[in-house]
Image 1 (cartoon, rainbow, N blue to C red):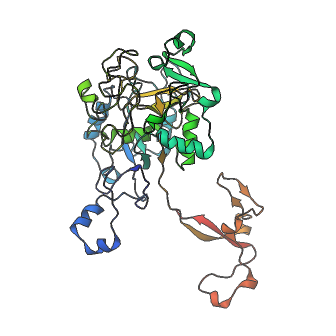
Image 2: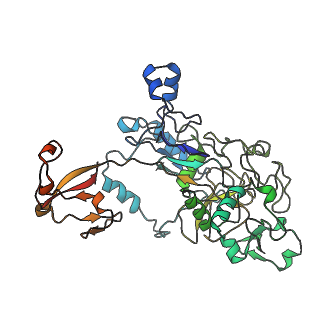
Length: 450
């Protein structure tokens, strides 16, 4: 992964120095590495750990309000680290169990007789920030993630290049906060969201007209794009050669090294939950009564330009507040969003508490004025192949296997890249060092090196 660098994206994964991220990442030049210079030794310590070892991140995932994470931290402090556990964030307490035993615990846990079995994908959430409870130890593979949410300017390039119409444009309406309506009389006739009565369905509202007809995004080109559905966000990421983040990936980046017993804070800036501190760190509602009184202590009543507030320890902007962000996964009727938005509070007295564990779900087609997204990209993994002999009399007819595991006996396009037939007539005595002659029933096939 040391050879990969993408503009506007930050790598999250293990480094040789023992950390999980370094904003000043460098690659040691081969010539400089041979000279053994002191400065280059420092650069070497910031190199990323390759895929030969466990280079992912292990941390406590879930709500920030549940105190049970302290039990995990306490147990981790008393756990003896050895072998593969030495470089882990949280010690692997599953050591000694077989793969079957671990999978059985995950898939066939004990069912509470009072509540009964729960549907697939169900998680218990905390009432304040909506985070998963109880917190649990999770592992994520390394990844790249955008520094900031996608802006109106960036999304506009995508829409113009592909003539893309968002679902809000196709449906003809989108949700707008009622205190942002351009005309007060619209409240008398407009429909509201039955689950969130402060959001009004406005005809003609979409990402270019955030509050409806007569409004424009022109002076908000550096603000996060809003009024995009889950599908709209996924289409943009695909166009960029990226994808939406998983919520465990997103939280790993948002916590920015606050893993395990080292430090697990409530907010991206620490534990200080006062408006005086928060107004310089994130775009939230503030002390005013929601939804009519926004005193703009942080300088903004609605969305703010990305990179307005300081980044977290990894260099990511707006992981708390500004806009909710779409995540990969979930169900169509319950897509996951993370991070909180400008309508949320610090303590959860109204809407959600904007902590690092804040989480909510929305219908996949929902588009509102406080939901955006950012993209991630997985590092490339080098795959090495080698040739092995295949005896058809012993192992059966040689077949081409596609990416889905389907085997095809009839040669398809590209089949010659996977196996070749050694013809005795083409055998040259000068090639003795390259291969041995084989019969018609013995062929060579291309396999992935273990």
